[in-house]
Image (cartoon, rainbow, N blue to C red; front, side):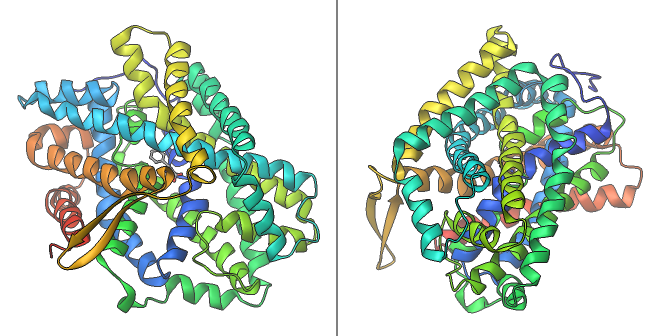
Length: 463
Ligand code: PHE
């Protein structure tokens, strides 16, 4: 059954949906996570696998997720329950919604801590703290920040309050306003940084690191990480895009809007890579620096470039904004559910969701100081000793990006591709070209789920 609107509201236009979904997709995942994970995993081959996952798995699943949201027009948990009922399927499909809400809490908990780092860098950049620093200086600055739990707690708390404030105001007055101007500004600043990078003499080194594949280094884990990054960066598999789709007008084209979001997201990630790696090589740093990568490389660039004070401040400000428009989408599925099922008003629901994620975030804060020793166990698999575990931050990140999101995506592909009737799917998607619908349906039914399964199996050395 087609539903015209959600009780939570509706985007005022198709373009606003594209901006909001792009706001959700573009965030720390593109500018912080993509470069550091690519750097740790050898660059080129990782990047190409990531791009393949975006196109073959990400885009088709994004379309499926939006279609589900728009058909159900409720929080992902209730959308899955309602659609299962309507299609005569087992209630257990509601699990997809719950899995997503759990992933949302865990991601938000550490996302907010990293956004807090960015927030603190706005003030450092603005205060001229980078001036005259060399590589060791900027690293020292980063390390002193992350090893100070009290400071991290203050920034994390501030960022979480910012999220609650926006989400409390709801779809139109809260979410929409934030994204309209900030996305284009971020793009402009990234282009400027790429321009600076090009002038540093190591640009081609950066380009070849990013695009020249060395397949000999690729393991099952590399592929899993690349697929996980594709899900993470597109906000897929946890219901964020689903709920944004539930606020989309019935007339908008799901394919066109998805294609725009995916292209913008991919462009930002690649630009971030092109901005960062040449600076890494020019400064004699290692690409495998880890989560601190952009917080160490970018200040070096800002310290040297003319106008670096202004551009640096602006850059971190925009990074915070990009993180902000992503994290509100992490909260939205759980908030909408509390409103629908517990009868809470939006502000109360936002406070509860933000409060839980804030508390969980303490684990990430301490992962860089008091609890920086990895916890876990040794496993012997096929004669190979393997350590499973890490810091709480590493585990939260690995579990959500590489396991929960792809699993959510797999279930969504199976639900839309195999369990819903083709009629409902076609009706909701409203594609004019038959051939095009068939191509998408085929990829969703076969290529995407089989791809995800193979990557899972390869990662645990079963194939
Ligand atoms: N896509 C966001 C980013 O790249 C993170 C995110 C993941 C947001 C999952 C919502 C859901 O920063």
